[in-house]
Amino acid sequence: MLRIYHNPSCKKSRAGLQFLQASGKVFEVIEYIKHPLTEKELEKLLVKLNKKPTEVLRTQEIYYKQNLQGKNFEVHEWVRIITQNPKLLQRPIVETRFKAVIGDPLENIESLLT
Image (cartoon, rainbow, N blue to C red; front, side, top):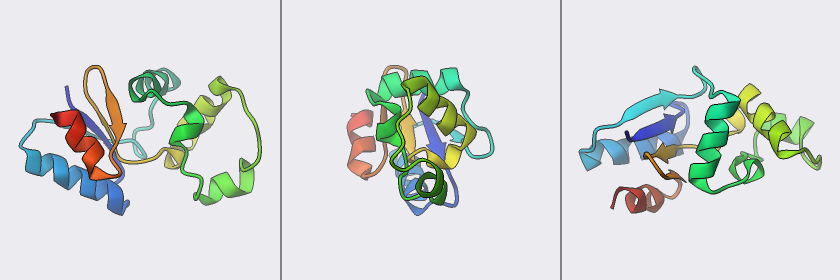
C-alpha cells in the first residue's frame, strides 16, 4: 500500500500530495500531526527510509532550537522525542511496502513510483 505522511499546513507536503494525486496511483493519506506515529511505526518507517532519527529531524522547528539543538540522545530517545513532537518529522514521507522516501524534492517520490 502506498502512503503519504502529510501535514496540510506545509507547502512541501502539499506539493508531494499533489504529485501523488497527479500520478494516478491509489494511496492513503496519513495526517501524522493529527494521528502521530507510534514509536514502533516510526522505527519501521526509519528502516524503510534507511535513515537515523537525526536524519529526519526538522531542525528549523522552534521546539528543536529551544530544546534539542546541540544535545545528544540515544536512537530510542530520538524516536520517542519525534513521536511526542510530530512536527519535528520531515515531510512529506511517501512509503511503499518495502521502501520510503522523504518527498522533498519531488524527484524522490518519482523514483519511488518507478
